[in-house]
Image (cartoon, rainbow, N blue to C red; front, side, top):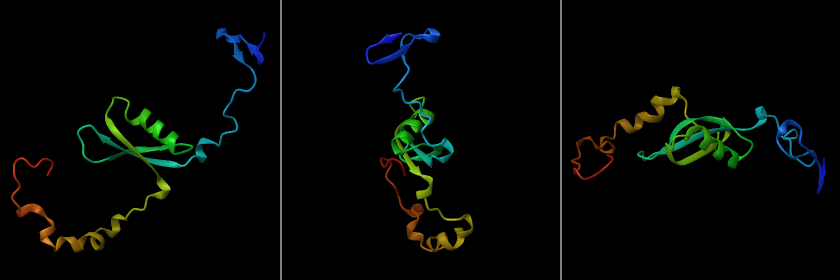
Length: 123
C-alpha cells in the first residue's frame, strides 16, 4: 500500500501504519544505564514529602512522569519530588551518636515543657 509521504502497511489489522521514519527506541541507551532516582510524594493530608521508592529514567522529566504513574495511581499525592540518587548525601547509622548527641543536652530545643494552645495544628 502506498500513500502520501511514504510507504504504509496494513499488516496485522491495525490500519495504515508507516514503515519508515518512526522512532523505534533502538538507539536509546539501555535502561540499565539510566540514572537512578529517589521519589518523594506529599500526600493530600501530609505536610512533608515522604520517600516512597526508586526508579530509573532517562531524564528528570521522564522521572517525574514515571513517578506519577507508579506512585500516585490512586490520587494519593499532591506533589512529587524526584532526585537523582547520586546527588543525595546521607549520614551513616554509625555516625548517629556523634552527629546527633550534641542536641540532646540542649533541652530548650525540645518543646516538651511548653504549653501549646489547642488551636495550633500539626504540632
